[in-house]
Length: 54
Image (cartoon, rainbow, N blue to C red; front, side, top):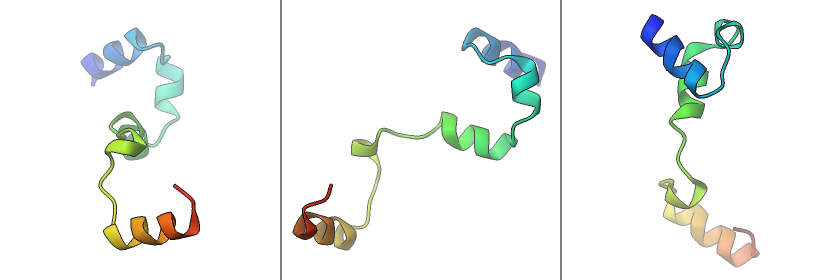
């Protein structure tokens, strides 16, 4: 865990901030993909295109 905290400090995240975060939620945010690269349901994509929202 010490290595992880050291790496987060290099990213600009202070240990106190890290200690207050839910670990799994924090990891989900760190590993999030760009919206254009996310896998989506083709039916939802089709419905969004028909509505004009992307």
